[in-house]
Image (cartoon, rainbow, N blue to C red; front, top):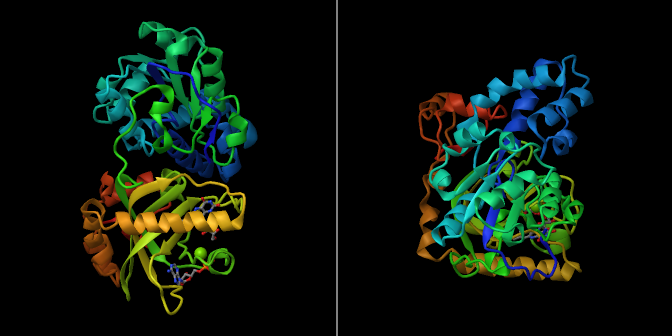
Length: 424
Ligand code: ADP
Ligand code: RBF
Ligand code: MG
């Protein structure tokens, strides 16, 4: 949810944090931890996530060693985890909006610094996996280049110094509470884009708290505005998800008059963790019925304050009957807005209907209409295992062209029953 104070401060330089702000490092870190803990006979509890986000690797290791009573020192535990990370550098994906932000600031000549508590050599290896990133930052400051890392402001002050500017001209973008405190201590403006869900209130020292990088409005800070919104929507790198329609909270039709055909969040927790909450739209295929326009929310439904992140697709079509159990596939092509809370049920319903109208209209634009014919939506589901294995070498659009074997390594939750959904 976006919380905004009246922002008047103008800036000329931008300092961005890497892990958790531009890159989805946390989701890889959590996957690796889950595996390591399993090997040690322990079970990962997602409540520990906040102890990892925004910490140095050693601090995170110390927290896990303590929480799970692991019979090794933090250093030993870290040395077990490090080789697993080294294999994964290039599998760490940019967070939604990261590429867009970097390209935008770079093409408008806004000087940018990249700052991270990790050693500079790690940062350089890490960003070399992402086209155009290295060239976009005039300054990179690693944790090993200053005496004290965050929460000491040294690292941000050093970035400003190397960009030949005053701290007060810098806007910091950070995902962790520590990072926000650090930026403020350096005398800078700070946008918080929290990695930890549903914790916006804990970031109240930030100048502004946003749900994702997609929601940044550079003009608020005296920087050039984005100009890529089309009829109230933002094109995104399309992604695909599907499976049988399951029972949801049972309130879509009853409470809101807006039915949402839920997919199992549990089977797709890895995929959902890569996509920031918000209202998106695209195309929905029901294998036995056809292809329809669709608008959906992903997230915790702040109005209902759910504890689980769910995906709630509303098909923009009147059906005569339910279709629980039927195969539903979605191609998600654009973004509308962050999830929000509303003062009344009526205002939530009105807003969802607005979203529906926006999606309905936008999906006629050639840019979005093209995806109606995606093979993912039109191909029938293979019926048996031999047909499944015939697909093994098909490229997987969503995760680059990872072969199946690697996909299983990166996403241990994948199995032959659900991996197919991620293939085109
Ligand atoms: P639940 O909480 O079980 O998801 P909802 O009240 O949200 O219940 O209703 C969703 C169900 O309604 C879907 O699973 C589907 O079977 C049916 N349905 C009928 N029309 C639509 C529609 N236009 N979009 C989504 N689902 C629909
Ligand atoms: N729930 C919210 O609490 N806040 C929202 O901003 C919100 N936006 C939605 C937008 C769309 C297009 C749809 C289909 C649903 C949205 N919902 C939102 C979720 C709605 O509350 C959800 O469908 C019900 O909770 C059903 O479980
Ligand atoms: Mg529903």
